[in-house]
Structure formats: structure tokens, C-alpha cells
Image (cartoon, rainbow, N blue to C red; front, side):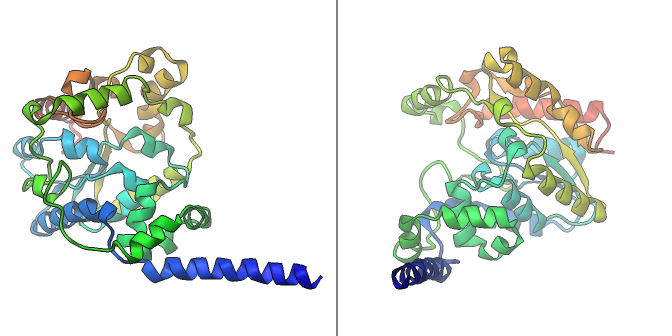
Length: 323
């Protein structure tokens, strides 16, 4: 009996120590979260400099790489801020970050990556890292399910990084970072001449041999829909128009032939509209050949960015949704 009591208190003590170690390094910036935070800071400054109604793009990096904001601005005669950064921080944080810069009367265009519609409370490595390093206060806004999952999946290495490798030096090299974001918030230097042979080869190896299976993972009862409902309601209370649109994704034959994948891409717009929300465009119209992607199956090269934006404008004008 004494051994059992000792064992229980030992386990509880270890758990308390683990939580204390986690708490002690929250808010410490990390290398992994640096480029995302740099980009958000630059985009936040752009958005805050605009004192009129504006158009805000909210998603992950498919829109960061894949939308020409100046074309939207020239067409709709409103300032445009591309507030899309990285789907890796997951849907809740993406929506939370957007709320920092959305004001009364704005229009929010949301070409969300398809896995965001299947967010089920399972936080990935990037979300856990960004949450702990940059937005620790948001932890309390998550559900108990999400909180438990995050705490359970914080590794010892991540805790050590939070203490030892903590730094806040802006990223100035590589593909990702504020140094490659223009005055609208769009990624720059994505012309095909910047796509190395290795990047292209690695991209094809990853995405052509293992095409996405978002139809398989989709669940209409996922937690993500609750976050979206709360976000749309929050926007409506501020007279903010929300428009869902397709993400771009590298075309694959399975999206047309697999029963579950075909159902997903053929019905996701209907699912959104049935909730009383605006969804403009057909996902299949935003799927392009592998030659038009930069370094992932979501990142378009510059010429394809313009093609995709032209299609967005066509769809938006056709439905008079921006009036």
C-alpha cells in the first residue's frame, strides 16, 4: 500500500514538474515559429495602415503564394491585404490572427486549404510550437480536448528549444519570411526561374506519389465547423462580409476518380452554402498541372498566381458578391 501511494505521488509529481517546465518557457520565441511571426507582423502593419474598408484574404500559404492582391485591388477598388500565412498553424489560430485586423465593413475572402475543413482538434507540430512561442494566451480559448492533446504532444526537445534555442532574430534568408512578402502581403520571387531542379523534383516525389486524401479524412461533424461558425458570426456582428472560395491544389487523377475524393471536391461548396454562407467557385477550376507549382502542391508559380486570381475575379464578378 505504501509503495502504491508513493508511486501515485511520484507520477503526480513528475506530471506537475512537466507542466511547470512547459509553463516556464511559454512565450519564448523559437526558430520554427520565427518566419510565421515575421510575416504576420509585416502584414499586421500593412493592415493597420489602412483606415478605410478593405478586402482581407484569410487562409494558409496557398493564398500567400497564389493570389495577386494588386489585381483584386484594381478590380474592386478597395485596398487588399493578403493575410494568409501558413496552414500549419491550423484553423483556430488562422482565424484568431485574422480577427486582429478585421474591422467593421471589411470583406473577408477565405480560400481555405481543404484540410482546414477537417480540423478535428488534433494540433500539428507547427501549431503547438507557434501557440507556445507566440500566442500562449490563446491556449485557454481552446477546448479541453485540444488543450489535453497539445500538452500530451509537447516533446522534451520542444521544451528544451523553448529554453535554450529561444531567439527572436528576423528571418532574412530562404523562401519563407517577411523579406519575401510585398506591400500587399503576397509572396514574391516565385517566378519559375527561382524554382530549382531539386525543389521541383522533391515536390513531385512528395505529392505525385502520395496525393492528398482529404475526402477520406473529411467529417461534417469536425470541430473545425464550430470554429468557422463562431468566426462567421463574429464577422456578421461587425457587418463584415465573408466569402469562402476554393483553395488551389495540384491536380491529381484521384480527385476525379476516387469516390470519396470526388464527393469532397464536388460537394464542399454545397456544404458551406447549406450553412447559409457564401461559397463562390468550383474547386476543380482551381486545380492546375504540376508545372504551375513552385515548391509544394499548394504553392503556385508567379504566372499561375495571376491565372488563379483572374479566375477568382471572374467568379466574384459573375455572382456580384462584392457589391
